[in-house]
Image 1 (spheres, one colour):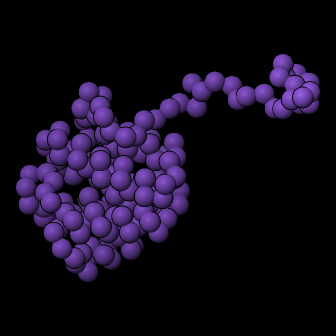
Image 2 (cartoon, helix red, strand yellow):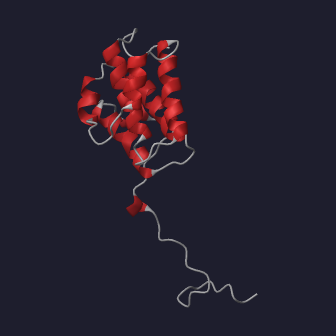
Image 3 (spheres, one colour):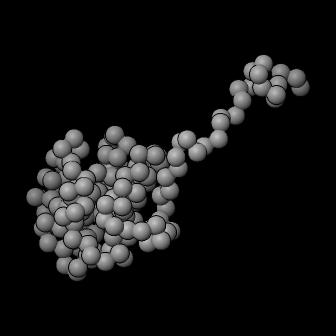
Length: 154
């Protein structure tokens, strides 16, 4: 599998690994399925097994010291289609634990913005960030005197 300008070198793989691990930690926790997915994606990009130096990078990833902005600037993906492909891989990582979180969606959106993708170029990606403030009020609590829906009758 290729991404970017064709053949990925070690530096490219480090940046991609960091971005994938950032997605895995975007919700504040690393799930085993997310870690497995990161390894599978990286192995697919390399068309084989992960070299030990890349396995160590994934194993030793520190989300506290991860600089997302700097990593996005250093990632060498000049074509929008390659950036979209990377975002699709990030989505695959965050969906691995089958729990979608606003922080994870925000992470993908932030990567897209930092890589210079427009809204049109992002169209069709599976992640959509919804502002909590834009959500309607929660439904009334059953049997709440203030509720116009009293379920005690029946």
